Image (cartoon, rainbow, N blue to C red):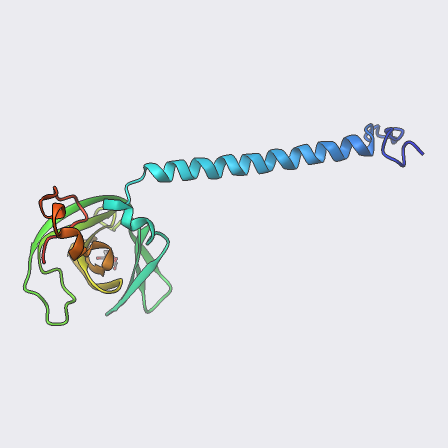
Length: 202
Ligand code: MAN
């Protein structure tokens, strides 16, 4: 009865394996699942802590875009930009795809272009750049890399992609994330030091 109720261990089997009571076994299983949960939670906590040290641009605006992807269908390829993650070149003929770089850093670039009539262009001024590097190796060339240059736009969209040198790509992309809030530019905002991620084209 004590064995059935889990208080005593059953007698060892011929190979001598069962030597603990049901109560002990269940307690050990509970401990082990609590330890697994603790390990998972600790690893989630470490991931969140690492994430907090990552650069998400001025005011962390790109944090909300992380995990989202946008595409452009262009000639032979479909290009896909996944914010804070990677850029890909997918062949429309086969299933092949090339990694055009993984997100590495923010930078900025001065551009000077005529405004496009449809608004889908960089215009002129200092623009936020996201560098994506260390993509798939290019035959007789470097690891693929992409400079993503951002312009203000009502919605996220890839405007154009060019291959400036072999396997070195430039992607022009519109996003509301780099639009300056007109109200924020009034008063003290006007003289505020400009950070990467802010624009002054108003
Ligand atoms: C693929 C594409 C091109 C690239 C060549 C280099 O065809 O990734 O963009 O120029 O490889 O071999």
